[in-house]
Amino acid sequence: MCMRPIRLLVLAMILVPWSAEADIIHLKRGKVEGIIVERAPDRLVVKTKVGKVTLDPADVVRIEHKATPLSLYHEMSAKTDAKDAAGHFALGLWCTEQKLFREARQEFEKTIALDPDHKGARERLGYVYRDGKWMTKAEAKRASGLVLHEGKWVTAEERDASVQRKASAAWQRRIRKAIGKGTGDPERIIARIHTVLGRKPEAAAIHAARLVLRDMVAEALEAKRDRTEDARIALVEVLAEHPSAEASGLLQRAAVQDGHELVRAAAIRALAKQKSVDNTAFFVGLIERFTGERYRVQGNKRTRIVARRVLRRAAIALAQLDDARAIPALAKALFVRFHIPEQGNDLPPMTMSLANPRSAGSTVVTDSHGNQMVMPVQEQTNWGLTNTEQPAVEDGFFFNESAYSALRKLTGQDFSTDKSAWLAWWHKNKHNLID
Image 1 (cartoon, one colour):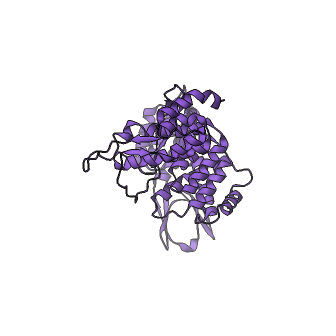
Image 2 (cartoon, rainbow, N blue to C red):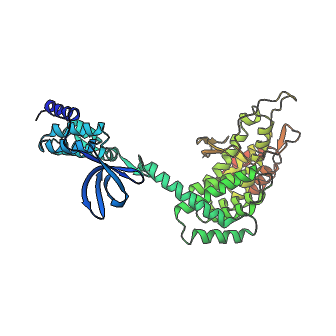
């Protein structure tokens, strides 16, 4: 049967009276509309749009017979040729208009069973045409490399990242609970953290410990009073037991950024045990950055204070790392002359988002004698300067006692503030100092 006669049949069935009727069962409370398919003394079964409903005859007030879309559908379905794909499709469209969605789907499924490439029925059922064949939307998504995760189609990488974030968040809560208020003997806090992590901690747990330390350092800088130094020391010790590039990066920043001297010292001790040139490169990179023109000439009062602080702390760390390759950088950090504008004519503040890391890229550091090291790729914009700290009266000349002490420790010499003498000694003796 072609499409036009079927459409005429559907239209005619709407316009003329039908022998098939539906039933409206009026109850004591409400009503049910459908077709009575079973009558018994103790029950009345009615087929409705959503399925069969069993009623208690005692609740029935009266039964009204009325033609309904569902009853019309059953009569039209009975008159449709079982092998007529176009007829089933037309009936499916009518069902859709009458909001008989379940029956519409049944008709569309009958259509593609008879005509697998029927475009209209395929699209009504949610199929898409891809790579020369019809697919369900789910099959098409999978063919595109997507996976279903928590009700959404995402890439496998996005799913894995979501799973990792949830696992990390759960571990962070456990670690925070083990830490408690963050005060007390660091060894006891370490023991509680070990209990939570287990003998062989999974990667997600160690990652969470790194995030907790990162957040606690930032929180301490923002707080009016630091109360978590013991917890931060404990976390540093725990992370030192599980070395990785990520852990080293966090310990490097804690060695300079953390506001508590004991936490910085713990981080430096952990880094010194690694005996890695990458750690030396990080602090040498800080010296190169904070002795650059951006801080010496273009900065404001606040950034100059930060520069002095970072240069001191970087020098302290390099002294403990005991790596002679840091000598040229320490000589550069020995003293710095900052440009200080006249009072009231200071430069506008540089953008410094507290406790917020930003990517700085990697850079090769070359000293005056041609030695090269790779600077770190991560810059932390808050280097331990709290919101409440008030800068003191400035002196343009900055003598870095920490760099001076580090130079004497690494060389066994004392050339005071003579940078040229320190660099000359390094150039003469570097071959004996570096393996």
